[in-house]
Image (tube, rainbow, N blue to C red; front, side):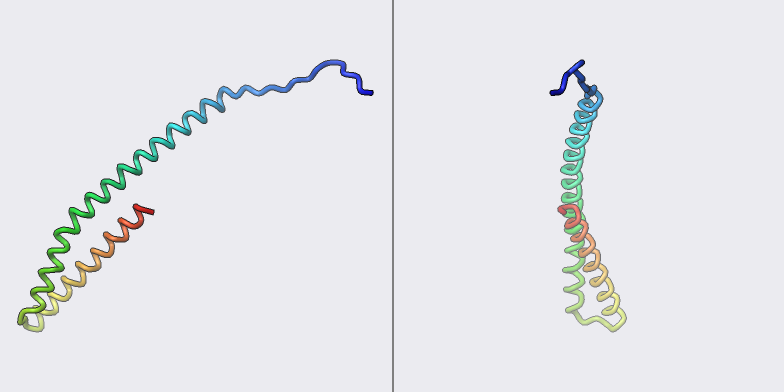
Length: 99
């Protein structure tokens, strides 16, 4: 039989832990709110950029259908290709923001 002479008790002060957990929760909430704000900004600005960009793509398409000399046709093709590349970059930024 085991004889207990003196009770032993281990205790930890969790005040600091609780305070840090509270700060962590506040920081996580702030991050979530900031992410929502960033997503809204990206969405708004991408649409502000893509509107004029779509106009450029459309206008170069119309120009390409007209009778252009070879040099002007090449310039029109370069503008059209650059506009399409820019549109793809904007789409990828939006997709990254949504991920």
